[in-house]
Amino acid sequence: MAACWARIRGRLREEVGEVEYRTWLRQMTLAGIDGEDAVILLPTRFLRDWVNSHYGDRLRALWQAEESAVRRVEIRVAQAAAEPAMAGAEPRVPARTEPVGLAESLAVRPAERPAPEIRSDWVVPLEARFTFDTFVVGKPNEFAHACARRVAEKPASQGFNPLFLYGGVGLGKTHLMHAIAWAIREHEPVRTVAYMSAEKFMYRFIAALRSQNTMEFKETLRAVDVLMIDDLQFLIGKDNTQEEFFHTFNALVDQGKQIVVSADKSPSDLSGIEDRLRTRLGCGMVADLHATTYELRFSILQAKAAAARVEVPAKVLELLASRITANVRELEGALNRLVAHAGLFGRPVTIDSAQEVLHDVLRAHERRVSIEEIQRKVAEHYNLRLTDMVSARRARNVARPRQVAMYLAKQLTQRSLPEIGRRFGNRDHTTVMHAVSRVSELMQQDAGFAEDVTLLRKMLES
Image (cartoon, rainbow, N blue to C red; front, side):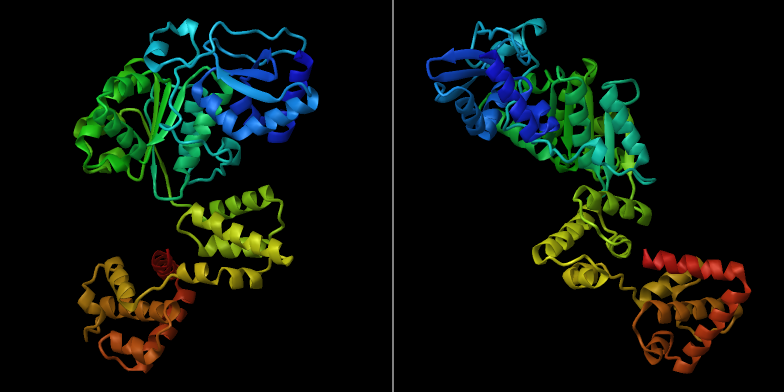
């Protein structure tokens, strides 16, 4: 029977892959055969329910292929820690196979029980694709990535607890948090990792209040080794939930447990969060993820195309990296859409097909600069009043910036020369033509002036 079980485990490992096998199936233990039932043990209710719903049918099919007498597979919870059965070893029957209640499991000494169990409806399932291996590192995110790596390797180390990750939408905060959880589970499976959104934390807390069961809520979360809360800004204005999180935070840190938090702003900029909580969040390591650069976006696209095993010309990647700058999720979505279209219709990925398939996305990301915006930016740059852009003043310190603004209006907008002239104090279109010509000449003659104009253009286009 042990040999059959070893072959079944080997088949499962081949079918689902090493990462998924280690995450969900490695802790299965064969208890024995009870009539027509193969009894398999797992250490927690969460694992039992997950394996039963996702792999139960496949386990039954593999058992029937190995041993026709087995009709059913029963998955139970064992109190004793379950290690994978070795080939040739005798199947062991646990002393207890009934589900263990939360209060009872917490009362057992740590040496006598597996890591504390977190209810499956309390946590967010981890994305298998969000690992450190799939995270593309660049200048905007290298510090946050290094901090995340450090926490994954040495949880609760001095100076890194809590780890606070912040940045805009789609810059990789959630990816790094999932990667930390996966790495800790892989290298230190005995540690209990609880990953949830701030919204889920609040809903669970409210449910505990309604059911008058707040002690279970408190004890469950304070028994974990690593608590990860995503999108903390959701707690802004929710005072009672903030207070509970504050006490949970303190309890875990005092026990030497790791906390990882993400938000869209730094702790000091999170208005609506209690001062005492904001102070505690900022006392560890705060790492931000900046907006992506062109080089990072291009590298991400290259990595995604390679992972999908699809050949995408460099010119297409350049087009997407230069035009879709808002966030990485949108960038990946555009690439997935392009690759799917090519696969469905059996066509190669080209610049023309990219512009056809992604016409709405590319159009939405066109930078539309207004003449008013140009005037305002140029006036600020040269320390002038906005009214100087349309005034009749001809002093050089006013006329030259005005010419620069006219030049940029011609380069960055679709407005006609007469319309540009009207926006600059009802000037004639020939005045605009002269301004454009003069600025072009000066840029060739004066490197400093050319650098000034180029900087203004980049600021307007970004």
